[in-house]
Amino acid sequence: MTNPEIKNKIRRLRFDHGEMTQQELAKQAGVTRQTIIAIEAGKYSPSLMLAFRIAKIFEVKIDEVFEYPE
Amino acid sequence: MLAVIIISVICFLILIPLIGIRAAPAAFGLIGFSGLGHTLFRKKHDPDEVETDERDEAIQKTATAAGAWTSYGVFVAACMIVWEVCRSQGQTTISIHVLPLIVAAGGITLFVGRSIAVLILYRRGEVHDES
Image (cartoon, rainbow over all chains, first blue to last red; front, side, top):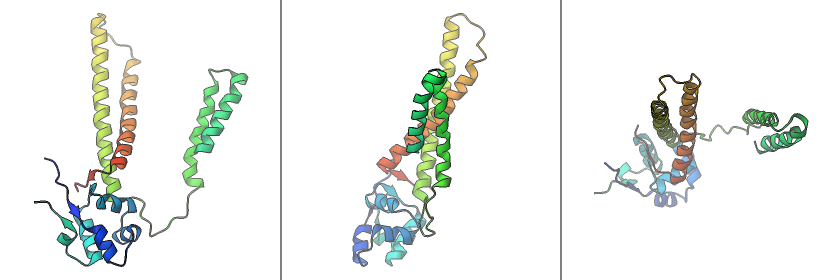
């Protein structure tokens, strides 16, 4: 079974939150900048914990950050 | 690392006329000192900087599995090849020196396969954390 590609709005949310850089988001989320880059590009699906941490950083619900395709 | 390799090559070239071409490759043992570079030239650690995260661990896990399966395949193939060669030549015994070579081939394949998998996975970036 292939994993469906989960879309995300991290890039837009970063710019909406004071033009946060990838490095700043990575630092707050406790991951490397390369991981944030991979997540934004849709090449890496984060763990549930990381997804919740990112949503908490942007102060939104998790489904406002990540979108599961129908 | 690069400096150590360059020094090793220079020593190799110097040793050729001194001890001969067959013994001169011993100069490449100096490359072992490159392992000290991480200790001697360590950059100042930023406590806020994350060195490895879940994605790195997922890549390491996937690469190790890929290396292990490749190593297993090479090990089985090597055993089958030795068996077929001995069978076709009518031999009922195998030289004792064959077994460590087969084990070494499997071990080398494990590390090489894992290294290649790490490079490919970091290049593609397509890893899924299944934790």
